[in-house]
Image (tube, rainbow, N blue to C red; front, side):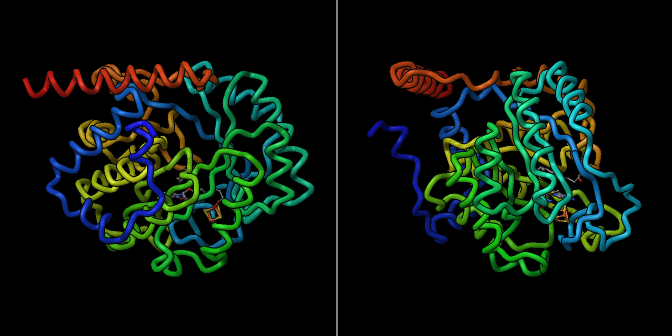
Length: 349
Ligand code: SAM
Ligand code: DTB
Ligand code: SF4
């Protein structure tokens, strides 16, 4: 077993994760950054662009969501977007530097009549040379297999919070339903994108509960979005109190330590974050963002603002994943470890 492989565990206890949360902030960040450097180039961030392919009128009751038909958020509902329009959006995202295109639909689950359209979207976006991701709600085994066969790289389905707090936020589908969709995505051979939301009024114990669920999966999700709640008028969570940014950064750092090989995405909520807070999130181990002026229905920072931030921080967008041979992977891990050692020497000197 290599030194780096031994850090990837699936048996985290609540006590261990609690201890990470109570570490002095500097100790926690140092540990997260040290782990981060063993697996990733600390100056590269993966860039995805979101596209809402079907907007609003969702039958579910997720208390945070502007797209639920149950809340009056003033959102204009839109039918499933035409395939050509989706491809146009993907081309624009690629031209502005995104390597992954994430298509989201406000559905409880896709209807069988919609499957041929979304499959077509996957195929055509892939032809542009982009990675594809979809988030369409719950999937059964057959639907997951159809998407995998079409070449879909990632499927996003979040656990959102701990099993204990979940019932305060969503009543129209269960935690178990979510776990089953994630299992279907895995079994079909797709990569899993699964994370949650911070700032919904949950306790620290709920953040711990969410991260333990993710980190103790048999395989860690390849992508772990950590969203900061976007408070949308008309939703039950519109008046939530401000989240302490330090608590948010702690959650990112703990996610990084628990899931060293995963991309941790600094996801929704960046519009309300200062550059300094985002810089700290990157230092804590976040290495992916949504890029482009809109998330699904709410605002995201302007692209040029993000590029300026990347330039100020010396961050470059991560290039598309290329399949390497085992020897190349081994050499890359050794080089990264060497670099970490040299960096540590530099800091200690
Ligand atoms: N309908 C599908 C589903 O729920 O799986 C896909 C789209 S849904 C918008 C995807 C995720 O976006 C949710 O699971 C939630 O984590 C996140 N999300 C939605 N509204 C949000 C908000 N106001 N603030 C932060 N995250 C939000
Ligand atoms: C995820 O975890 N966050 C994204 C993506 N996966 C689909 C969505 C954020 C949505 C924020 C509210 C909105 O724009 O509607
Ligand atoms: Fe519907 Fe997804 Fe929003 Fe829940 S999060 S209301 S399932 S679009």
